[in-house]
Amino acid sequence: MFTGLIDDVGLVERVERTDAGRELRIRSRHTDLVDGESVAVNGACLTVLATDTGAFTVAAVITTLGRTCIGEWEAGRRVNLERALRLGDRLGGHMVQGHVDDVGVVEETRRVGDALLIDVRLPVELEALVVRHGSVTVDGVSLTVNALPEPGLLQLSIIEYTWRHTTLGELAKGDRVHVEADMVGKYVRQLVIPYMADLG
Image (tube, one colour):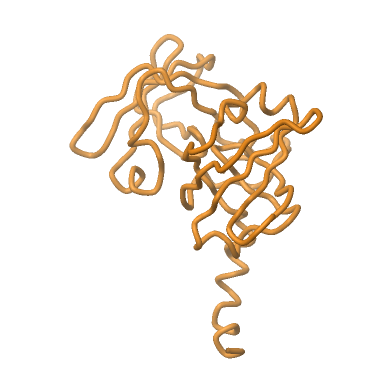
């Protein structure tokens, strides 16, 4: 479990193909990670396989590669990192599982005053799970839905602190991003689906 509050921006140093998927070595400021620990990498919960001075290695299996952009990553990419939540920690963002639901595509970024507006085109499957002023996770960052200008289009308003301390300030048109819808919304939808069918 995570909160979507990024505690470091890491650097992918090496990407290796394996029979199971990909292994990534990531440079990080964290020096006390342990083997088996969960770390959200751009919002995808991955398990630490090995640690070294200032770096750690994680694996993304084929299933994960099919639901994320990780298969496209190369050495030199900066990634948002968050260690798993501990009982007693402050929940400053919202409840994030680290299970990427799908991939969105950036349609536009623009500065308006002191904010960075980012428009993300969502897959059809996620449209019903995103509500105005609700929570959403994009590349591991807990965010508030600023607006829904049209069906399938998510608008985010990023404050200066966030775009300076995450990779969101680097996004450009055409970039693909990990999207995790609000966990509560997913459960509510699943519970009401049988009743919606009866109404139809």
